[in-house]
Image 1 (cartoon, rainbow, N blue to C red):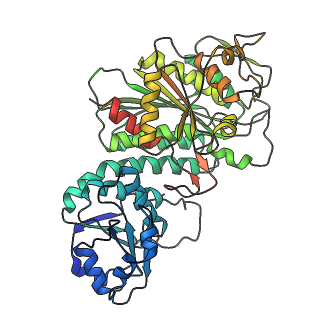
Image 2 (image 1 turned 60 degrees about the vertical axis):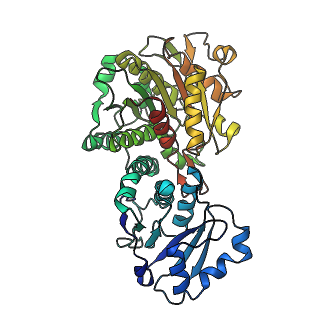
Image 3 (image 1 turned 90 degrees about the vertical axis):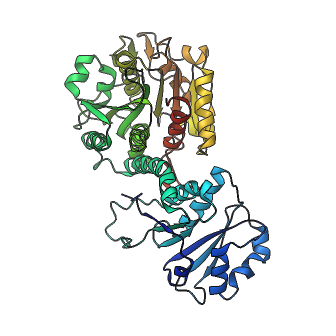
Length: 493
């Protein structure tokens, strides 16, 4: 797992620059003004820094772009990285600048000396950007470059204050990393039982955790969820994680995550091509778990409960079948059209349980639910469905502020009617047309009239084939930052 704690905050010492190892990074405004540290580097490099600042390349560079001087004369460093950045950048640009440095190797494989004199206001975003883009998942590689001595030394005129300022952003990065680690793990490692243990590990940071086993789920009447997992030797489980940092007795915000640790499609088996990617079908549960860790680490003054339904969807002699009729915890009956529309069967029971037990002030579910959302929105935006405009706007504003793509999608009677069954109260699939909307309409049937609700389909954003600004290719951790921001802005006391 990637370490988020590899930041060492020190007093600014320009005399130490000559002997610095790895990379040395400084920030220069668009007008090319040199502060004391930059002037020292320019002197050490015999004017090479000034030549960069007077170059056409620097003039054409955009905010957060990096120009590097490799193996500079007069220094031990491997490179001097000059980051073009306005004196008062917005948060996302500052984060992007940090990520650009990490992409060069500073945040992961090489030691980085980061000089942040005069940039304390946005320094935390720069540090967070380095952390986020410096992530790498190497758990199953037998030959990995030794990075034990690599890290980021942050020099500042106020290192203690800056370190304190970075605690919150780095707590968010820890939550993102946990989510990425979970999504990246193969299903033979991250079984339902192992996922439950990872949730239980959050007790170490103050989260209250309960694990409900199959007997308890059966007692509660969670037959729809249990049906999905009955074909697997991995037992189905429900993990309930509570962070009570708000007012005593105040109803919590509920986060619900789909945790299908592997999805073969069941009896309605998927094509073999690409099935290996179904290790990420627990992405919603991973986001919820990551958010809970972040809230605990930063001691959020809010009451939040995270509930994740953990199952494996496998074909076997004991698997549920197309044509079966299931009875949900709510009491509604569901005709199974396809066993590959399993996530909604997990979510409907967990959502009902969340409302019955916690009477939340709002409920947000996250799931890698449909391929249809990828057809509609690609890999840049998650699909957002909601029964409450104000609640939806809170999430969309938070996602926008954190640079996480999200797009509001429609609900409506037509989508709801598509889920009607001739032999049961509803069916679990409504055909190819508007597949993400009909899936949301199915879930809406399990939302009480008084419950504010958001459904987020993250199938296109949970794991991507190309690197993003803040992550290498693979698991992104999408949603941890947006949900943490939403909680900070709208639910903390």
